[in-house]
Length: 253
Image 1 (cartoon, rainbow, N blue to C red):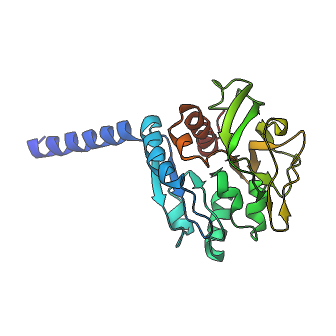
Image 2 (cartoon, helix red, strand yellow):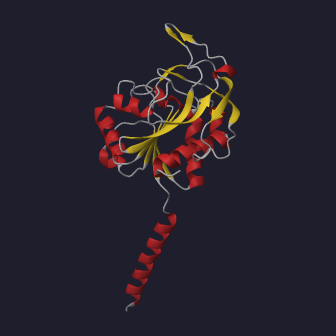
Image 3 (spheres, rainbow, N blue to C red):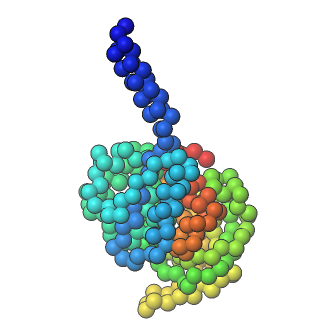
C-alpha cells in the first residue's frame, strides 16, 4: 500500500476516533426571548447554562430571538430550554415546528417565567400545566421535596428553606398524569399580592413549584425557581435544573 493511502486511512481513523471521543451527551437549544417583562436573572442564566453544559458534557446553543425556528433547524436538538421567556414569542409556523419537535419524542424544559409565555397557544399551556397568574414579593419560605429519586434532587432534604419569587397560577390544582416534585408551604410566607383586579388567593395545602410529565409523544419539565439572579450560581439549584434538563433530553431517571 502506498504511503499516501496509509496516511489517508490513518487520518480518517483518527478523525473518527476524535469525533467519537468528543461526542456530547445531547444537544440543547436555549431560548431567552421576551415579549413582556425582562428578568434580571436571565443575564446570569446564560453563562450559568454554558458552564452547566461544560460540566455535564452537553451542547447548548443560545437563541435570544426565537424567530425562524423550523423542523429542519430543530432536528439537531434533543431538548428546548426556555428560561424566563415572557409573552408571545413564537409565530404560527414556529409553534407548529415545536409541536412536531415534541411529538418526535424530544423534550422541553421551562424555568420560572416560561409559565408566563404563550397564553393563547393551548398546546403550550397544556404542556406547561400551570400558567402564571400573580406573585407576591420575593421572600423566604419552606419548600417540600416529594421525590428525591428524580435526577438532581437526590441531595435535597425533604424540607428546606428557599428564597425566590413564588408564583401563584391560574389553576394550581393537581393535573392527571403530572408528577409533582416540589411544593411550597403557604403557611411559611406571605402569599398576598394585588395588581388592580388581579388578586392573590393562594392555592392552600397544595402549591406546586416543580413537576414533569410525558406529553404528546415527548417530555416536559418545569421549575418555578429562577427569579433571583444568585440562584444561577447556587449548586443545589443547578443540580435541580440539570436533573430536569437531563430527564427531558434523555428520558432517563
